[in-house]
Image 1 (tube, rainbow over the protein chains, first blue to last red):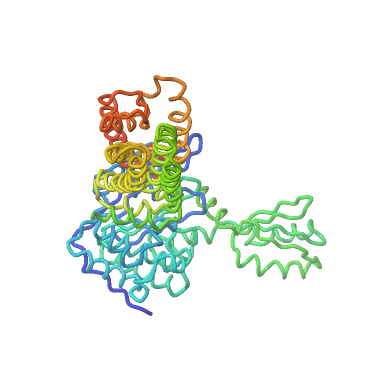
Image 2: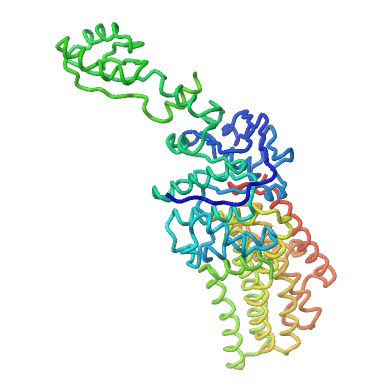
Length: 315
Length: 236
């Protein structure tokens, strides 16, 4: 495992505040009345595709005007205010890099655009941070997706920002690169920086951040400690579709089970709600065997991430 | 050279569309050399080659390719975000890009126009065409850089202006010439080297004032639009 050594701990911290932020496109509401305050540490912005995460990140980064509400960094608006980029770095989801430049040229150019006092040293430090020193003199066009992503992260970090926003930063990375990126985000957060990264993968967020903001359908569905939210997700009712040789007999038997919270008998079989996923899947074969019923189909109906998130909205 | 200028120039010359710049100037010089070689009277080939091809086609088309390439192409592929996530005042992004666009267009167009003017009449005509075309390059570039921030299809908008407004309407409806960069360039060239080959329709002072207004107005518009740049390519 590699150790990530970033820079000296930062003297000051920054806070990103969203107050009643909405964004709509015509009749479509992409982000609906979101308020949150992001302080030092790593925060995961979790939600299914289309939940509004990218729109929210773009508003935070000053690349989209809120239709309503305010987005401020240390009290100053991010929209139409290039000064915020002295304290803010962005790694967007879109994999857009100047492919005709080498990684070193690209990061150095970014350092110069920030008017850093020693752009060469800053570029080298940022490239070392993402472990791209060996390939820094190759054109970016020849890189793998993961290498391009790391180059973009280096460019976003070159001016040592207090706030770093990353949109799906683990996309296209192999496991080793992913681990390194996670360590890097941890280290940056531990230094007192405000790090926000978006993801639609629960496990990524679980490994990187203790605090999450969950977006569903443009709304902030849950906010706070990841373990609490994860528990809420795990304990939600699970829905199964079952077909058997005797649906009615199976329904009667299942109703007596503590792990079952509801049974619906329909033409196409049973729809069973189970409060405890593990207990239900263990007990079902035993019941079926005891009643002489043969289970033909057993399909968990709500295992998609979208349904998990939807449950959070209703909870 | 500023970093924005350097990145813009590298991006422009690194794209294949840059090769599109070469055929038209070569055609202009080729036709002038051919006409001169065949001893055709300048009064016969001068107007269609110098104005019909040089000022009405080569100048605006090259300016369109370059002007939409310096910013519009970066907006298209998303790389513009890297320059925008810096604290640079937006005028420090627009002006270098405009300078690159106008400089490349001026060099690409002024040299063949100078050669064609020289072959048609004199070095003075060639020089006047080169100077007027450079002013036109700046005006067209400012217009097309601004168009890159006003619409997601700046090339289409530019083509409509060049082909429909300047190419068609300004030849049919006299009043539209007052809003035609092509006619300003003709007027300025004619003022610098009076000749019958160009056929000016706008007075030189009007041309000078309008060219300046377009350059300043379009540049200020581009700076303001870049301040409100949204990642989806919209500006609001």
